[in-house]
Image (cartoon, rainbow, N blue to C red; front, side):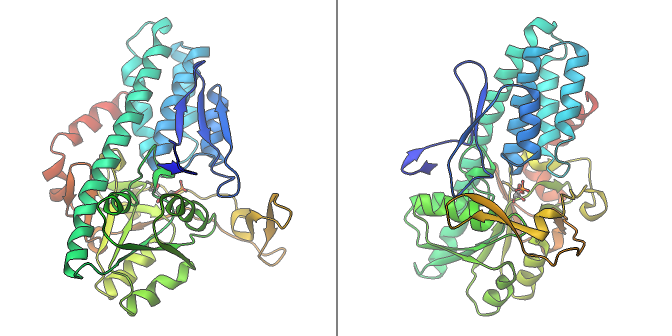
Length: 372
Ligand code: MRU
């Protein structure tokens, strides 16, 4: 997608075998490229959220494993790198999925051959993610086109939560891909952007992305969505996901569930857009089984932003001394989800729906998981 009119991705291999990323902790105030030279850099980039978003976490972990194998390609090195990367963030299953895929590709090889094959696998995962996100965009844009037709070409208002755009993937994104493709098709759109406390991925990242692509949007306080839905100002909600169970429950950024409840109460369609790498075929009950990341409470008590002198800093918003809790994700039960949008099309948020599009996936997932 475009940054200042130039096409960019979120992660790419450098000429010398290192990997480069955009440091998302500095957006939208500064665009800085950071080099990842080895395992520790990759672990830090994911843990500190220089890269974030389920698909991008997976791709970065895949590259991180490839970087680690350049230094220590032994069986012990492989196991240590997988363990360190897997421990960075617990909710997005794309991380474990991508690690399992790279590990499967190299485990039977002699150590000297592993790094090169792992880098090729990481590059393949990245390219597949771009293709999957573009397909999600096309299927989702068909859906937005149907809303536009029903409204006789009037502007379609879409609400989204957090950042599930190109910054959360390698390119295009998941929830925002349909918006970008719909814009390409000339559909008139406007996006309500939830600010998404505590880290403000909506206000900082989604608003930045949409602005750079010229998509009309308005940042709203996290609590405003229900009011807008009651007044008919939201035609549909599209969000991303960090993990979807085989029964169609979806974990996404904290606050997504509340939007789904408001959408159900107001009969506003609520769609979850995600590639199949986000489906965890082992799980059947999202609320009970999906691990929810808890992050440092300082992300709740403080807020980061550009200060008057242009530096990026933190300011305290909570009363000094008050304890805070920082739950990163919540689970929206399948019954509140109108449908899933995947790289193979749209389906019901249910086991039958997912299996109608991905009949082979449960077996492939089980095979890869057993190897870890
Ligand atoms: O904590 P983050 O910023 O990694 O959370 C990101 C989200 O919750 C996204 O909505 C989700 O990963 C879908 S990304 C395409």
